[in-house]
Image (tube, rainbow, N blue to C red; front, side):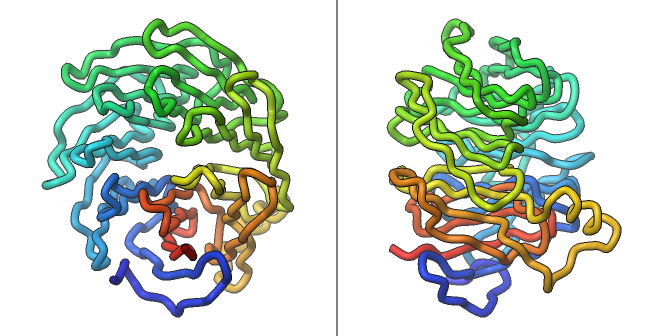
Length: 326
């Protein structure tokens, strides 16, 4: 099996680098596997979403007028939602890349989209400080969830579809009742922006990634922090539970604030690679593996549905595919 441009394989214990996807012209915000694991989608500020197959071919190029910040496959894999800097959400037919529907309603950049487990609704979040819920049959806006004080960068449905979690630059995670729009709980503790969130598959826990350089694991029955993951890394941009709930993969900034300034003026260096992806053990909080392949910040990580692959997206304009040890 070949995914994109084959690279030299490096045995690294838990994982080995299998492939680099080089097709985008600017940094890649998000990467997602299709529900059957046959496709990989990547979204970039180069105004495109690329759909890749297992032979490394780009099957579809979904063009936007401006940069794309977020993507998500529907649970049945037939539809891809995308959104970005032009405030619009677009729904695409995966089979042929046709635009099916456009959802206007946000005022500012849309930073996150996510499908409900039954695929009937879509939640979105953005610069306008709102979480919005959409009926996908009609395209109608069902409800807005106000309350956050700054940009909302992350939104996820609980596995049973009854709750929504949102993470914001106001440092908080909020839990909402989908049916009523009622705020159920606010999770406080991060000292800087919450950039991404994810529910465990059993719905009992939620993990949050923050600009304060930590990941927090929350017990949703009590609202208490069970564990804080503190590495030697910088800002945590994104995270995801493995399908078996045993691991957390996370994407990190590659430089300190001072290092980012130098990197901005001097450019990224292929030889100066730092750790940008980490895998953590959920039960113990121990660091299992680090990845230092990207030449710049990693913005997103995604497990394949079978848990055998991990993809990471970076501002170096690449997507890396890692083969995980069984």
